Length: 413
Image 1 (tube, rainbow, N blue to C red):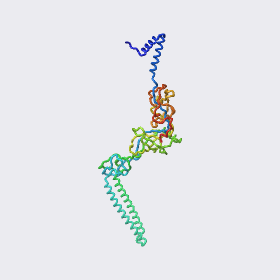
Image 2 (cartoon, helix red, strand yellow):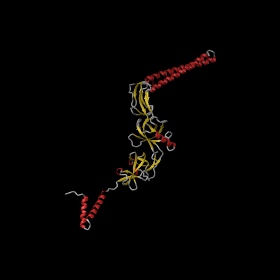
Image 3 (cartoon, one colour):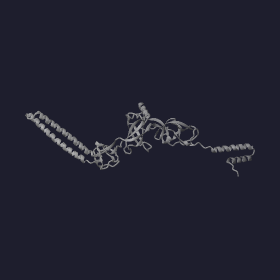
Image 4 (cartoon, rainbow, N blue to C red):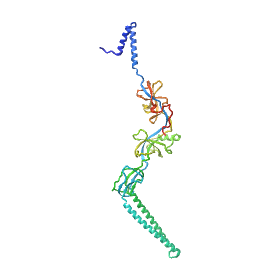
């Protein structure tokens, strides 16, 4: 039995029914029957316009932030070196531990220095005794001069000079004793600052050199709280910020501690806040950048010197802007576009000028109005000029207030 399509079977059945009725020419009946079947087939094949999710842009007050890559550095960093030479007796710290200023780190054999200090004490006592004797001799000479001529003026001058020499010798002895006592003190190496200590570089029993012969490096200490982050600002950004400052639209970081936010490696949003601390006095001629610095609290000591971070600093005064989800922005060669549903539910591609991201939404500087319906989901089903079935998002523009809502306060300080 041969194959017959549904349309053929439909046409044959219709012709038979009309033929039994009689009265109508076969040609007319056949034409009417074919037209009716074609209309039915077309009505069954035409799909409805594809559904898309639309939302109106969010309207709120925002502040632009400039973002740079920076590296953390310790505010204080010390190489701990031996100040006196000798054999190391002990290491008094745990590698990598937190130490306080004044904590004992190393002990160097103090006995040679204690012996020198003891000798200096004896020399000082001798100098003091000679000074007392010279003083009494001078007093006796002055008395004899006043009562008789047994002592000449020359003898008095000689005894006065002897007293001065004795006092000078006493001063020298005091200095020698102080130096000896300092060497005894330096044999106990203490932490000069608070922070995290590195590993010990010298073990007990080794001979170390003092400052007079190239001091031996024992360990190092870096401070952690607070901590610096250094970053380089490009010349264009510096010029723009200077222009905003001259127009009174932005405070200069030279005389104001502008707030900064820092995002660490692996993070998606800022986790630390701080303030600007320093701007260099010239641009680097090789890179055309300005070295800048911010100071960041580090209470939990989680940030270490040498880490990288993304630094955000205020780049404008607060202004009202329209924002949409960043996923609603498409790229058409060299321009950015969004798809807007017009009043007749047809799709239009709208070129836009983008601004920065703000709390997950993209600022649109030009190309959109607050009442526009932007396709935020179902872009793959939208075709320019074709009709769609728009459905308003439950939370306009990505769980934010809609354009008709009251603008919020500044998104950033």
